[in-house]
Length: 92
Image (tube, rainbow, N blue to C red; front, side, top):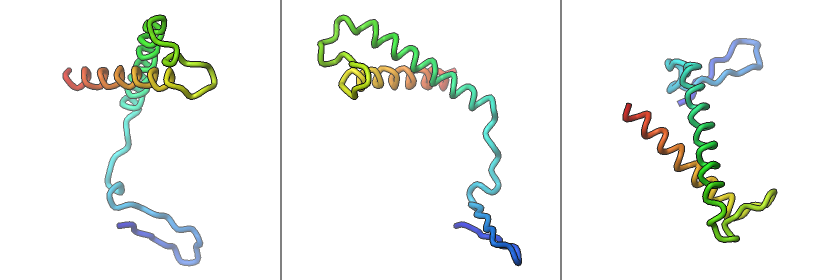
């Protein structure tokens, strides 16, 4: 449910969600850790893709500036790397 407090004579309406009204903000450390994890996942995923590139069929090789199967495969490797990183951090 949304609450709309309105000041008399003011045309500005501020919407406050009851679910987030009492919550705290996200710490800068957790945001930085998520950014580092995503960056490492992208680098690892691309390393795996480029190491496997010579053995991939021609259709699975990425051509610059074109959406193709190679781009999907590269994204998949990055996604797997991110999942492995998040799983490893949860086990710690």
